[in-house]
Image 1 (cartoon, one colour):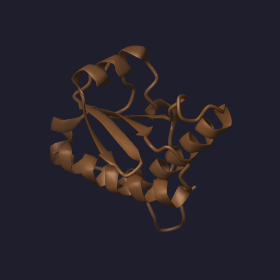
Image 2 (cartoon, one colour):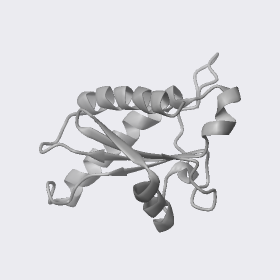
Image 3 (cartoon, helix red, strand yellow):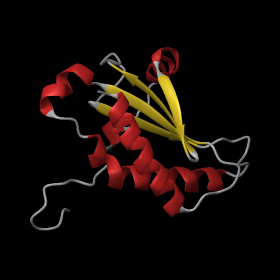
Image 4 (spheres, helix red, strand yellow):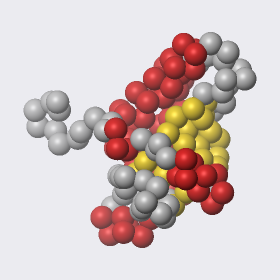
Length: 137
């Protein structure tokens, strides 16, 4: 529920999460990447619509090789999802340019060797989403 007087929705609906194997394959074969702090962003524009269900689709990962326990990986992914959920309004593209750049799919991977706190993830997420918006023009 949004506060009175605002039209921004902070929801992260299930259909905006990248889930299909072919979508991931397309992302890694045809996409690009960049790193911001402890987060690495893989992204691909104009992904075929049969692989995604929303104009902007996202996935989150944490490495099993570094974080052996599932609760550690899950906690990092929860922190990344929450930071993305609150910052996703940064990706809103002007309606005139929207038809050219969508659909957009991206994956956010945690790349640290230590468990980062939420404030660090949120700061890097904000910088990464601004960079992604700049690259999607």
